Length: 78
Image (tube, rainbow, N blue to C red; front, side, top):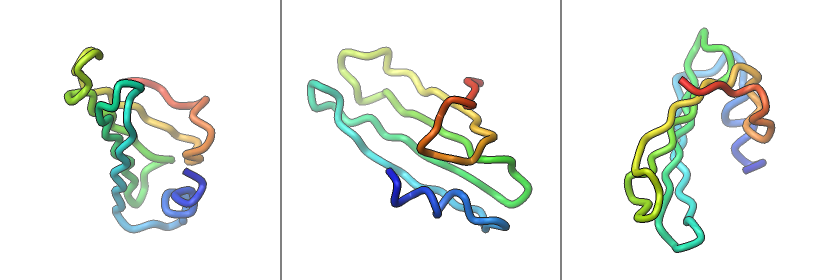
């Protein structure tokens, strides 16, 4: 994840998206999209749980105003 940090923290930044796929314990893919754009404070995270056979199958949306992808403490859902 540290390699993606400069990708999301450049200022000013062009509209940018990054997709990351990580497996669950059972091996199902969880796809997370990171998005930032000019004028946006920090970044947005969209987590796709649709392929997780044992999870809810829902999407989650988080806004992370801090802009540091390694510290998700300040992220809020919604």
